[in-house]
Image (cartoon, rainbow, N blue to C red; front, side, top):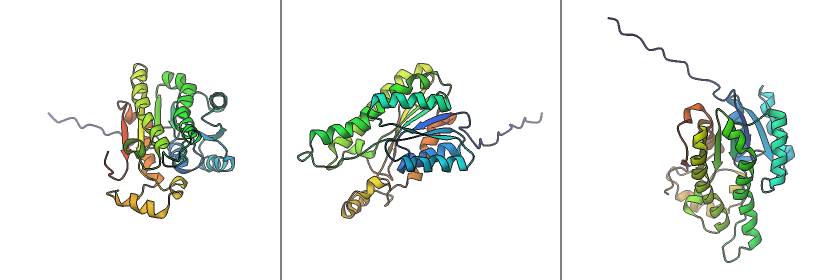
Length: 260
């Protein structure tokens, strides 16, 4: 008897065509590249910014020029009332979201001896409280979506710590526990929560680091280079897709081989 030949389905070209995504802090850096990648895969994208309206408009215009849908939405993620207002705007323009990418983050680097409470609180407010605020505002969307995804962008610094970054490391390390807990709570709704922890990446945040410090950091990276934002976006695309529907509660390091 002739053996039945299995038909191989063609590779899905636009895996996010039926998704709506919000990327916080997506007017520049890693967030901008994530917004571009999700749109390239067919998603409608809300581009969040705090103050860089011109940059956010440039991102949405680029997406629209390529035949996709994007809207700019302003909010300081550390301000819950502003985030709730943003959520209403997103739902009015695009409907409920399926994918939330908590990417917004800042640094204020000082040794702990020189760090003020204001330095500490400002970073925690944006990086950690901002993730809470956005997740809270869109939690029902993620729960009810057939493709609900919570994707938090952390950092290798949250895993290893880093000199002069007690506030930043704490804020990013907190995202690991937050992600794992939300993964447990979302599981009964068939929604997932995962965390991406990039290594040191070529963005304007890295440009603030003195060259001699950059050289020292690079010595500790086995691949002997910093990441490019493009190195990060593939993992976010994967986590947003159906291919990652059985992955949840994970912290995924993209750091060129730096140990944790």
